[in-house]
Image 1 (cartoon, rainbow, N blue to C red):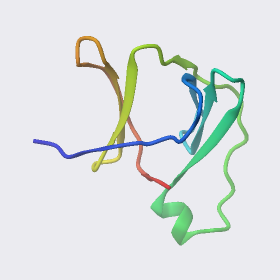
Image 2 (cartoon, rainbow, N blue to C red; image 1 turned 60 degrees about the vertical axis):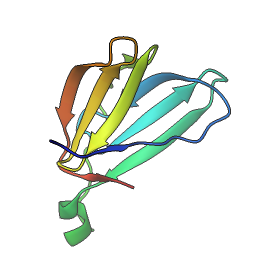
Image 3 (cartoon, rainbow, N blue to C red; image 1 turned 120 degrees about the horizontal axis):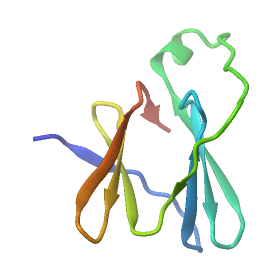
Length: 99
C-alpha cells in the first residue's frame, strides 16, 4: 500500500492546465481566470549543490486537467487520476519533493 500526499494549489479559479518543464524541475498551473502559478521541485541534488544550473526550457508538455486529479506519492512521483472512474491515467517519476 502506498501513501499518497495530495498537492494542494490555492486559487479562486478552476485549474485549466498543468504544464511541467521538460526536465521536471518545476511546473506551471494555468487557471481559468488566465493566471499562471509557478511551482518548483526541489531535488536533493540541487540542495546539496546550489551552484548547479538548471537547463533552460526548450519545450513544455501540456496536460488538460478536466476531470483530472494530480497527486504526489512519498516515493517521488506525480500521478494523474481520472476523477470520474477513480482510475490512474499515468505516473511520472520525479526524484524530488514538492515545496
